[in-house]
Structure formats: C-alpha cells, structure tokens
Image (cartoon, rainbow, N blue to C red; front, side):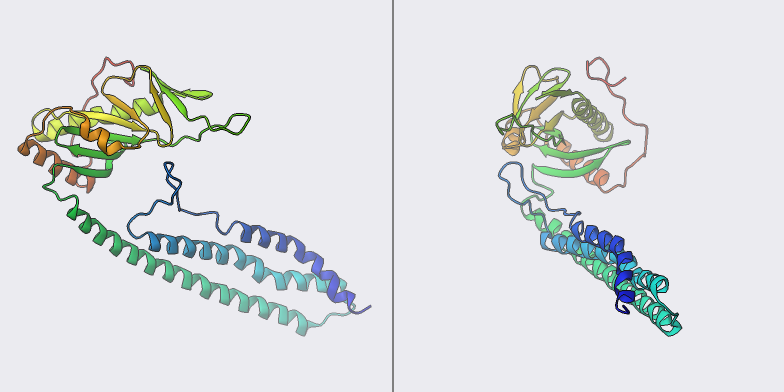
Length: 312
C-alpha cells in the first residue's frame, strides 16, 4: 500500500518527539521566584516585574534553543525514512525536505536573535529600575542616617552576605538555608541547637557556618580598624531563616538567630558606641569596599587565634 511509505517513516520521528516533550516539560526549570520562609509569600525586590519578565524571556530562549535543532532535523530524519521505504527515489521530494529544514533553521535563527535582543532590553530596563530604586532607598536610609546596610561586601577571599551598621556597633550577617526534615507523621522538625563548636540540626551537625561567620566578623573588625585608625566593635550574626534556635553555648563574638525580627535584635544589641566621626569613617570605608574599589589593596588582616573555631 502506497500510504504505508509515508506512514512508516514516522517511526524515526519518535525519539525526536520524546526529546521535544522533555524540553517543553523543562522550559520553566529556571524560576528565580523565591518565597519567604516566614510567611510563604513571594519575596519582591526592586524591579520584580522585570525580573519575572526576564525569567520568562530566558525560558523562551531555552525553548527555542533546545527545540530548534529537534524541529529542523525532523524533515531530514523523515526524508531518510522515506528513502528506506519508498519504492522509487524522487529527488524533487528529497530537495523539498532539505529546503524545509533550511527554512526552519532560518526561522529559529531569527527567533534566537529576537530573544537575545528582548533579553538585552529587559536587562537594561532592570538596571535602570534598580539604579532608581537604590536612589530612592536614601529616603529611608540616607548616608547620614545612623543605620546603614550593605549587601555582598567582598573580603580579600570571600563575600560577606550583609553588613549592618548601627549606632551601637557593626554586624557581619551570614545567611544559611537548610531544608527542614519531616517526621513519620508529616510534621516539620525545625529545632536547631547551637553549641560552642557546632550547630546540631535534626539528624546532622555542622560547624562550617559558625567558622565562616566568625572569620568574616574578625576580618571585618581588623580591616575597619586598619582603615579607621581605631578599634570598631564588630559582631558576627548567623541567620537560619525558618528554624527555631536553641542556644546551648553560643561562640564568643557570634549571634545565631532565625532571622525573624532581626532588625529589632540588632538594634537592641549594644556592642559599644560609634561616635559621629567613627561612624562616618566606617560608612565611607564600607561604601568604597562594596563598590569594589578597595579590593586587594593591602595584606589581609590577620585572624586572632585562640578560639576553638579559629581556622588553622
């Protein structure tokens, strides 16, 4: 039967079809939207609408980039099957399959170019919105204000997640996310015990977050003293959002908190007094550091030894 010559070659398209289904199923694999561990609501940042559009644009780029080769190969694969089952060779038909693949290649090339241009426009809009948002933050966080927060402050070898400056001290805040286990009846176990040398989670223990936070706070204290010319009170803060904290002996110079009501806890913590002159020096040094203008300008401040969590 002549129609079988056109139906049987479809067998060769099944692997390509399976790959296409997998690609479509994974198109939203990259989803940057995150929800708060406190109330499960979506966390929104400046330019969040553009961030969501950027995620969708990247999903479209992934879809076109992955589906393009599959779709463009489909006519050629079907044509190879036709050559196997056809009773006679029709070179006009094979040329048609080749021309169709060429057209599909051009179509997907144009789609990829369009996606790249779309992403560039969204990134430009996001950059502008973030810049304006940072300027607007000065309404509630002016440089002369006694409270100031910096994000992703670089050390000589690492990054401090957040640095908070208050009238009573400087806090190096490190954040760690850990998945809460479940009991057999489906209840979450969210209790973590803080010991002098480790964090005891349900079923495992860790000490590296404590080491990292202490190392960051000691580096920051030494660096600020070097830049400001006088000692600056600094404390490390390890935040474990979503966990219930029980302290059985917190290491000296370190706070371990859940992150809920963190602002109030830092405001109530009295490390010392930063007079106006020292406060301004600390702010100026951190602004310069956070801007990346002061990286590797001198030897890394030494870490004071003697603490059980001091790295070797």
